Amino acid sequence: MGIKFTKMQGCGNDFVIVDYDEFKKSGLQMDEAAKKLCDRHFGVGADGLIIPDTNCNEADIAWFFYNSDGSTAQMCGNGMRCFAKYVYDNKLVDKKEFTVKTLAGIIKPQILDNGQVRVNMSKPVLDTNDIPFLPNDNLNYRISVQNRIFVGNAISMGNPHFVIFIKDNENLPELAKTYGPEIELGAEFPEKTNVEFVKIHSPKEMELCVWERGCGITLACGTGACASVVAGILNGLLENNVDVELPGGKVNVVWNGTPNKPEGDVFLSGPAEYVFSSEINF
Image: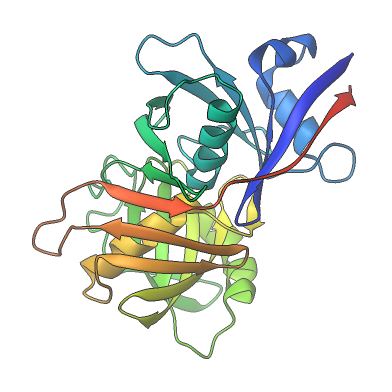
């Protein structure tokens, strides 16, 4: 049975998008389909599977989102930008600014005139019970991994993140590859965690590499960029409008919170691009 799909990417973070009616033809559970479609050797190859759901009463549209290992993710910033562009272009929604039901709540993307997508990512979650993060203090927590101590900040953007600021002379991808897997599975994180290694170049510019929960190393992570900017602002290292350089490209994050008043929604802007559309036989 042939299943039609579209592959998209945002800063190199890539996704397979399958309409719900097409997905039903597969006869598979969604987690099984995610593993097969996202396999880079025997499938299409992607970091995640997205299935739009137009049968939603709580928002204009909803999505099903699965990581490449078949696990669900509450939210994905790059995936949301690709999803927003896809559902607008394919007339599954009829307006440029709309609401999407996710496991992280209602998210509001907007198609911009320059072709990029801006997403209201909602408020950062700092309460340790809601992240979830077992230690009582989520900022500047010391964690020991392979005889090395890292100081990190636990923040949720609908999914958990642990943000680590490092020195300029260290290699971000190597740190993520070496220490990310163990931190992801740390006892402090009951639902596992994404791990960000961050270099701050100026109050308005930063660079990061992410070990993504359920994916491993990816070229970009939208929620990770947001969590990292929030952590930088709370530590007095960044201003409120920051360009974030990821291995796959650049995004912009705006948050008007302060260390004394950590309130307000986080806004993520960046590209969403088509790679190709085709059909695959299971």
